[in-house]
Image (cartoon, rainbow, N blue to C red; front, side, top):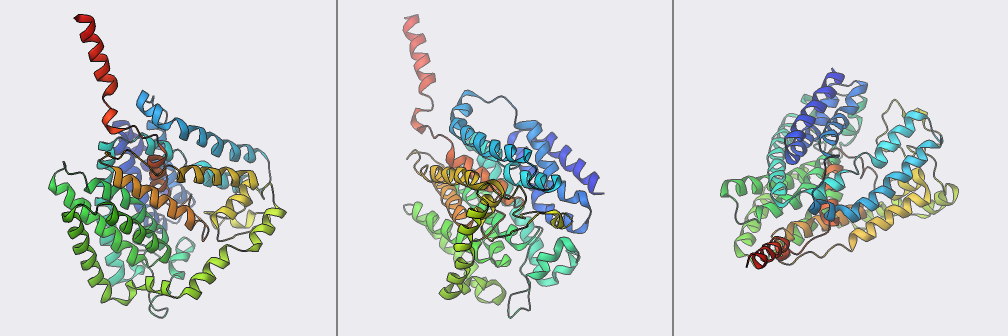
Length: 443
């Protein structure tokens, strides 16, 4: 069954991506949204590759298409970074520091999703709007599943097996009597992270005044579903990410009274729902400063420096353990797992690999400014804020580059932020110049 599902995912995404870039991305996200619950109910080896098959189908149809001159210009600087970020892990793969299958999983974690950065840079404004609509509809669907899990229980949706072990370990709400809600995802963190990473594009699309009101209503509903999803998942890190995006959005559109009133009404309604349900209030634990400081100290400590001294060239791809199938974990030589994405990169790719990623993150941080008259300015600013926040959250956990489908959305946002941004008023300048020259010659 799992093999058939892989073939179906590959075929659907390939056909959709041949039709258009956005349709392909939408189907890839559809597979990613359903991946967790499907894998849990089809606990076979090849179930781990359902989403990978979808991504390969999408890549096969879109990644190698010839770019327009404008797309080549936008992606030029990002291509240079990706060449370094991909070439170094590929070189390390040749060195047999771990078992072959372990290194293959590690190579996937290091490079497999990175092309989504180029895809994000290629998206045109109209394509971003269409993709945001896909996200809004998908968010509403998974919210329905999450609400059903909330009232009926997880057992009706996720059988207990090694693939759902993490889900059933998250019974830490209301005095350890209730579970965090994963909806259709592999765990609650993937659910909340996906909701947060889709918010910048949905908010940016909702601010496009020329669009039909019905589509705007769907986008606002999808945004509300994302916020409720974060609360149902009860993950503090993602709550902070969502709060940051909302804060930046409110201050970015402060001159539009109607938008502010809309934000106020939506947040008031969500606050009213949360106030009556203790299971949605785990974020209030952030008031415990001692707990927060202990959590940070557990991930950022002197042990990280000692590991850098011990493994300056890394311990081999896959040795950090992220997204390693349970049936391969015993094959890792000297397994070391730290709740820190940057330590994980250092353990697998060495100090050079870590240095490349740090340099890329710092470069991306400098890409804050965009054209002042860009109608998508707020959305791009929110994508920058979300990317920055999640790069910082890498200090407190692992899986930033392997979450399904959060990582795909995260990297699409990075591509949007990192792409060269032409001044909006000069988009038609080459065409006008050419027409002027022709008119002069004819005269």
